[in-house]
Amino acid sequence: MVVEATRLVDRALRSVGAVAQLELTPQGRRDLELINRTPKTQQRLALRTAIVLTVADGGGYHAAARDVGVSRTTVRLWVRRYQQDGVIALRDRPRSGRPPELSSETRTQVIGLACRAPSDEGCDTDRWTLDLLVEAAVRTGLVSSIHRTTIAYLLRQGAIQPQRYKMWLHSKDPQFREKIAAIVPLYLHHQAGETVLSIDEKTGIQALERRVADRRPAPGRTGRREFEYIRHGTLTLFAARNVHTGQVTGWCQPQRRRTEFIAFLDMLATQYPRGRVHCVLDLFRCRDYADSGAARARNVAIKSE
Image (cartoon, rainbow, N blue to C red):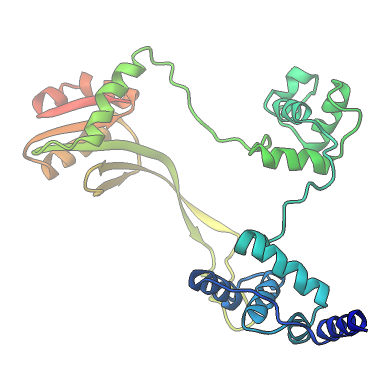
């Protein structure tokens, strides 16, 4: 009889939800409450913290399940995990996921294929496409089959964009390194009383005029611009930028000749009458200016790019 009464009491306690023994440290409670009230917290994580807080406030498993809207089994699960490992146990555990179809070596080889020139792999083009990479990977025996989306994923993982190019110019000047060593310190280290000017020119600037004036935008209608235009010849822009102050001096002329270039330098000499002036310009104009004798007549140091 005593054993049967004990069983009935235990069953009754389980049915009403016996009070769980869960005590939180002050820091642990602050961490749980912070997670629970943060707007960007994942809903499943907020639910788990609410379960632990409800039980820690004296509610039983049954009351916590009723208040939060889950089963008592779920309440016991997250309370037990919290007791074992703390707040970190309330987050999802890492999952292995589906085993990878491609080995690490194969992935590296596919990325390496995209880093080589298409012509080296027998493709009659200068840029890779996803379809060409699929064809080359199968033809070279890297894989038996592969989808173009897998190729795109591997390229993103490797931060490879074989379809994109940035233009650059290789210098054929045998004294390129020596000139760089002389010019770069002028840009990086400003000497008092000295001026560094970067000089260049832009030729063939078209002076255009629209046949009809632009029409301004209106509600429900975009602005309009006439396709046809009137040519007024071309201009050449000579410009010099003070690399340390950012000041730009420009001068437009209808022609680009030695005469105009020397006149532009005379303008700069007038603008910077004191101190030493370093002019950095391309090799063609540097030779033109140095041979003219004007450089020797002014306190100007010529540096060619």
